[in-house]
Length: 490
Image (cartoon, rainbow, N blue to C red; front, top):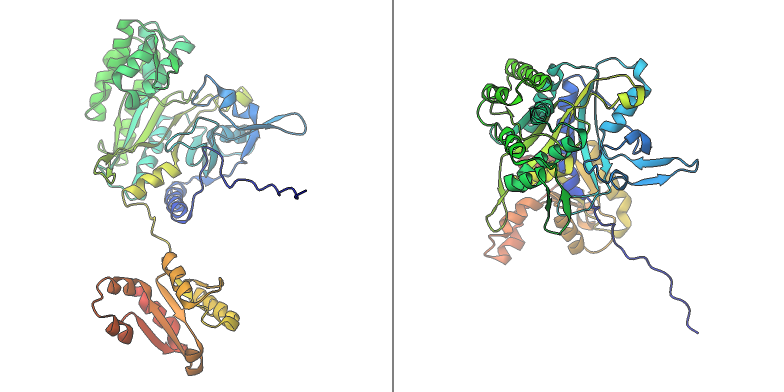
């Protein structure tokens, strides 16, 4: 009887999750570093909350409010309490503020970057785990705090390498739409949230799709039916007219909206906030071509209570077939004055901005921006003699002490294998000390990037082997400076 074969798990990752490797991680880290420098310079403090929160602390504020229990990854602790992986950084911030309210300076200004998890249906570019980077101000009801977030969003876009005209921060106040709904008699909570969800899909579904969701409902390509807000024809036309009220300067949009809110005090409060935001943005130099007022921006999350904003990429890249890549929104935020009150019963105003790091970094990479190639040049010390590993590791340490990024090859194999490894790693230089160099007190250094360029134009292989134009041999006490000179040319 043959022995039972050992179980070998299949090497696979869960659906909706991704492995992020060197260049991707570098681009993301570059973007986080650029953003957090901005936040820090504006006086915000870093905070790191745990990956898990009590499920009751996160609340039911997921984008898909029809299935909040399915929207998170949860497990039951040994004490019978349910824990959930955080789905954003805002709900944990509200818990933190409520827990430490008496000890915090108000307003409390913090930033945080880290992974979040959403148990949602994955799709192209839509993952269940991704990185968000947030900045929030808790404890200020002033529209000036919202204006500051909008200005921060604009500065983050610039710090990421974008110029004016390549991005736009679109701003609205949810209370204005609430005022419009009051004027048409459609302000009850369930209907309001359906209208907000429908309006939030304008860029994806277009006017026809939004009109269907404002009415009886809509069936998508998969056959799934989404129930609508059941507005009548006049109500649908009014809401669509509100969504169309953008365009032109911030002052022009405010003037158009004044005619839509009628006598609604809620709508008037939203307009007053936009007017103050406009004044602050103008005073600190955020122009109409950097931040605009756009009534179609409503944001999907249910906890927003006032001003909302989205950062949109206008710059375009192209697929291999020449078709343009449309990036759309890469970040957003808004005011959420009721979130801390869930814990304390006390109203605590708050506002914040967040961007999806992975999505933003991928867009910047497609545009050729964002520091994807900003890693320091790599130098490989070749293991030319098998019994000299200690010497080669010491040489790599010497390079690192001089400020270079360096490694000694420890994988074994001949010179050809090692040079192929250096090439695949994108190394800029290779350092070689074989028996001939060691006996002569010398070091051979190959300029790999120069060699690759010259090799592309080779016409005489014999001359190439004899001249070695991308290789130099120097005395042992000069080799670090020779590496420095090679890298400086890069």
